[in-house]
Length: 321
Image (cartoon, rainbow, N blue to C red; front, side, top):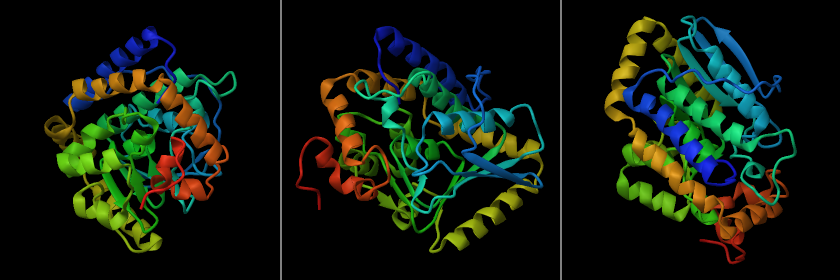
């Protein structure tokens, strides 16, 4: 999420999250969020076919969720407000190994923060606004996942209305290895999607789930054995949905949100739990260790097997079976 710089920041984020999450719980459109002024970084390419917009993430080397991708994703989401032409949005990846790898750990690190003028707090607030918008805008969002999504980026996927997964999918919440908790609503969504016992199993262990298992337990809607079939089925579903009136689509999403989304209080309390844990030395040391092991988040062998090597983040070397 974002670096803690005192109680004022914690209170600010808590209150901001409560306001946005209340809109998620009600199924209503979030309040206007003033985006940070920035150029387009070109990390997302888009194409439009009828009322369907396909967005593809390309942020080498691992599609990390950094200040560039955050700005471009916020720009995309904001462009969907107050319009009726686009009914369905697909978010896919150009990287065969990573959907969106994970949150840029420099945004969390007190020891290795991002260089100025990058503002970690703004990017954290931006992510909250993005996920709230995805959950509540009268547009149907489909995550076409065929690669890794870990921590905050798995949480991002959980806000999508529909998730289809390909053979390269690995989803996980590895915060426990950093002495943290998922802070962006992932715990609340997973409990509702896969049940209390399975949510505890995966969040407490930090283990990943593949596409077939994710589909079997409800983490994603469906799994496909090839990337080609995944894209074909996502496109077919998107265009079928888009063939129906937008007013009906919006009303259905709003009413299902009203009866199924996690409560505003629960999501806000997760963030309030996350923030003080992030400031502790053990969490900061784990972030530093991860940056070293991953060669500064380069998508090396460590990152491709991180769930099995979480003990190394805390200084161990034995690995998990």
